[in-house]
Each structure stands twice: as structure tokens, then as C-alpha cells.
Image 1 (cartoon, rainbow, N blue to C red):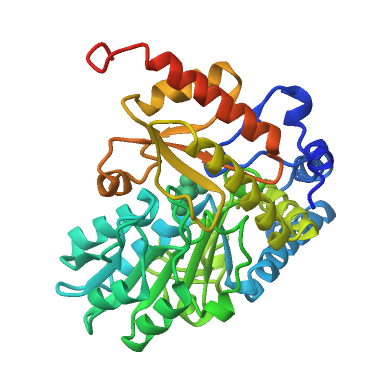
Image 2 (image 1 turned 30 degrees about the horizontal axis):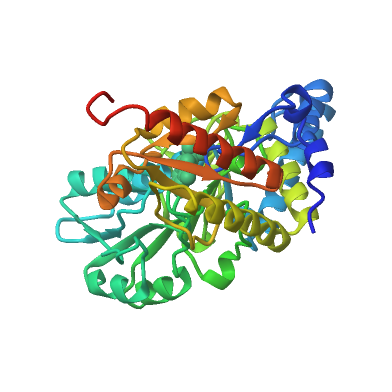
Length: 406
Ligand SMILES: Cc1ncc(COP(=O)(O)O)c(C=O)c1O
């Protein structure tokens, strides 16, 4: 179904690190050759600014940059001028929270969840503190899911903002977002969706979802670091004030006041992330040639095998065996996740240990931290087998210590 051997040839890291067992794609996916080539091409043949000059090289660079915007727009079924390039999901979500902060007042309500990555939670927590709006949490189910029913429990006539994750970066659960958006809109609230984990796993259609704002990062979809996307409905973006001021975004500047260009340029103050956008376009191309549904079916099948094998090891708690993406979050009884991760690293196996920048999820699970294995299309059954074998040895090794001595 997936020719992993061939896919690995597209990821130069495997030529440089043949023994690598990379299982941390939810943090950052590996980088694919066409992305690296597209970035090199820009720096080797152009390397100039966009939107500014009146010479050939800058026209060409501008064309590549704007084509990248078109490609990203098509990828999520948006209009081209609804795509703002940012530094990443964090920067996209902060931009929206800052822009809406001046529009909130005491008594307004912001709905979020304990599943949020800090970059989806903290900007709104700070906005709530500044404006005396109330931050409300959707009650999670026993296994940590957001449901439409639980969302209804916190939605009121005072709800102004709903800021939630599309797919949790810790538990891999997908939010039933379409129904939630429809309900929020009935109350006149706007919905901001953190799609950082969704973008390289499921097809995103902003029109079908009718979502107001959506954010994701290039580096989680085989693209470069330092580039991300903020999608916003054009009618909403047109009403918003920019949060950063500087080069290119101003239309007319006078001594006491200024006017802004149209969206999206109004939100891209200063020299944009030109090489990043060009690299991101190449990443989108790569994903589209591989078909998200096939990729998803492949990684989930691999996930199921690993989950089954892990279940056979005594003392392992898996928190999300039925997640919608191939992210496995678990703990080994009596052993700190960092110790297991360090043990695995000696076998060249890269997994994540910690709270994954989502401390409320750890609080919800009533643990300090967890181990997280996250798969992508370059992983294969051998990776899974090496992981399970190494964990088995880690468990045996650490069982030699008493709890007290640890
Ligand atoms: C669900 C989610 N939201 C937001 C982010 C933040 O993304 P970035 O660090 O690229 O800004 C991440 C990254 O881990 C994430 O997984």
C-alpha cells in the first residue's frame, strides 16, 4: 500500500542517519527532499525581497511567494487572499488573540479545552485576564474527548470566542468540529481552530467546516521550520486591525495616522518568510502526490500493530489506543518517561517524553508526564518492532530498581 523504502529515499536524513528510528513526527516531521531543493533554488537563483523592487529577480521571487499562497489556499479550500503567512501555529494563534483582545469586554466568554497545546490556550488565557472575559473549559469525557454534547454545556449567549484544537497533540483525538462550529455560529461566536496536528494527517476544507480562523505549521508537514499559516474568512480579516506594523503593510502614512493595505498583506508586516513559504508549497505538493487518506490508513494500521505489541508488555498504560491519528501516548508503571526515552535514545529511537506543551492534559490524566510515539509515512513495521523490543528491555532494566531507589 505504501512503498516505505521508496518514501525514505525522499527524506535525506535517512541517508545521513541510516539507523534512525524517528517516532516524534507530532513534534516535527522529517524534511522531504523537494522542500530542501525548493528552498535552495530560491536562495541560489533569487535570494531577493518580494513585493518591493522593480527588477526581474524580485518579480520572480514575488511570483514564487504568491504561488505558494495560492497552493496553500487550494490545499485547505480557501481563497488566496485568506492565507496569511506567519512564523507558525503559535504566531498565527497569538495574532488572532491579540486582534480580538480589544474587542472583548468583561462578562464575555471564551470557550476552550484542557486538550489545548499551550499556543492555543495561553493567548486566550492572557486575553481573558486583560479583559476580564471568562475562560470556560469544555468538560472532557472519561477518556479525554471533546463531544458536541459537552460543548453545549458551556456554550451560552455570552460566548464570543471558541478556541480549540482540531486534533490533540497528546491524545490524537479529533474534535467533532463541524457541529461545534455550527452551534457556536448560532450564538454569534467565532471559532479559531488549531490544526497543527491535522494538516499532514487529514484533509482540511475550511469552506465545508465553515470555520472562521485556522492555523497550522509547515514543519509538521515535511516543510521548513519558521513558516506557518493563518487562515481567516476574508470578511472577518477585513474588519480586524493588524497587530504588527511595519514595511509593506501600510497603504498611506501621514504624520499622525496611517491606512493599511488589503488583507493578507496588512497582516504580513516586514520582510516575509519567503523561503519558508516556497518550501511549504513544495511540502503541500508532496503530500498531495501521496494522498492523505492512503497515508492515514497506512500510519493507523502501523499504530494498531504497535499498540497491540505494547499491550503485551506488563505495566504499560496506553491512554489513547483509538485515536484518530497515529499518536500513541503511554506510561510505564513506576518508571519516569524521561528515563524510558533516554534508554530508547541509546538504541537510536527518538520518542517524546514530557507534557508536550499541553500541561492541562497531564493534569487531566493525573500524571506528571507521558511518553509519546507519533508516526508518519516514513515509519515501517521494523521501526515498530525495534521500539517494542527496546521498551521491553527498558522495562526489564528498570524493574531491577525498587521504586524507592528510583
Ligand atoms: C496541536 C498543536 N498546536 C500548536 C502547536 C505549536 O506549533 P508551533 O510550535 O509550530 O508554533 C503544536 C506544536 O507542537 C501542536 O501540536
